[in-house]
Image (tube, rainbow, N blue to C red):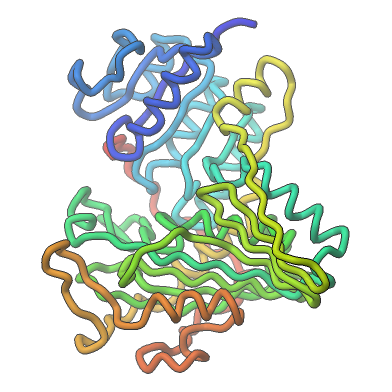
Length: 398
């Protein structure tokens, strides 16, 4: 098996995780980090030991040309994803594209259609969909282990300090310089909860979505939502409700829960841990492994393995992104509904942990649970597609 040369675009921020993962695969002898694309080159102490001295450049296309890389990992600001992906695709370079794949459905289609026309492989970086728990849960549902599937809930109660929104010019923005960003709780940090809940509901493609309701709010002084929920109606009549906050009182592991007529399955997707509860049985807990998505892409190129997260199976997620993009701007929460946790320099929404859990448990929106500050937004039907926005800026900082 030949070693696959890789270029990483965006090596700071979350890109550091990719550097470590590439080092792991390089130690196995299956990849080689050939280049790093950043506006400011990485210092030697920013490159993990064992990765050598990869070529560095702020010009992504030139770096792909000079290294002859076969794969590009794109971990750059959300608005840059489509243009960078297409630049790689034009050169026949295969892709691992970080989530969310694009800031709008139109940009997503431009990326996905362009990649398909170029004939290159593209994997979208929803790592939770590489978990072996996902097919195992879908098999349990298909076998009727919890009866008829009624819906899927998702809960993400996380915390982010105010400095989180100062880490980059696009952080917490809906738009920047006239270009969509849509860096909200459901579309970026807790995007896995949305994508994983849709996967368990067997509703991953754009055509699987018939309606979307959103409630988008913010405690922080930002443009995007930090406390929000969404309810998706699927073509098979099921409901998928995901509630999220970055202002939790006591941050906890995010999870999704499949509700059946005779039981439920809870999946803590960052831990690959599953709890099966069903009528007539005691609780059963399982832990699963997962397939790394970059390794799966390399296996696809070298051995013909099936890709796990192709663009089309993120179409339903992108319909959610589009509904959030076209919804009214997130409403500021009343000041009496949150407080500043001074020692951590973060804002906390009173009672939000319980509301997030209740939304996932009942498939209800915040407003239906009695939250006085929540009201439904007129986000429209997710089946409608928006026209493309101005082209994203081609920058690679993270």
